Image 1 (tube, rainbow, N blue to C red):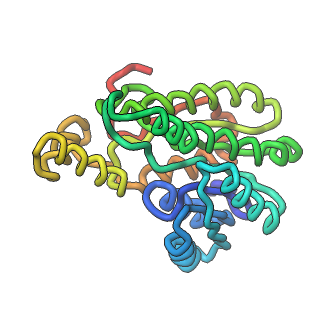
Image 2: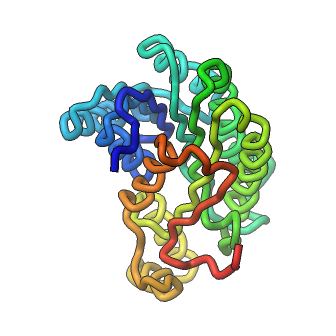
Length: 263
């Protein structure tokens, strides 16, 4: 299937590892030029070099923390200076810390807000004028299964990712007349560094082995296994494509059947 991504320009946030990196690699493999950012300069530079070598695509690494407005400005300016446009935006950020309500003070909530909601809003704000002018664009937000079925001990993520969903659903209606789609991808339990951190937190909190934490999650998933980053990345590439031009305002889970609701 030709996804029509050749010569498109994609910006992928938090892309030095995990889901962001997998999405950047998939878009590059489909022929898009990719601007990718992360806070760690060495990590993002290394990831970009490897993706470029594997795909033959133009891949531009930028050191930027999208939880800060200055970081959003840095990475979007880099994309616009190099390519003159951003056709595909993938908002993504590391998950807020785990823990119950009492574990998080006001500063933790403020940090989670900037990391999860503000980053998505400001990235969209930066690229939407150009998308509207060209009457074509794709905005894809990486959120979580928790927006449809909250996950225990993740009150920060449950709350702020749900806010991203509300933002995206409303924005999708506003920009649809301009040929721009806005969708959310909901990763389930996927084999990433974030999942390792959650397993370690569960191990420490409950006094269980890491393997027991993984086994418990796998027992909840009808497919009986954890997801792989490339499986989510495949959906991101499709939603970014010409083929997905009539799909917008959706929140699509990649979770092996974990979510039990009908909608």
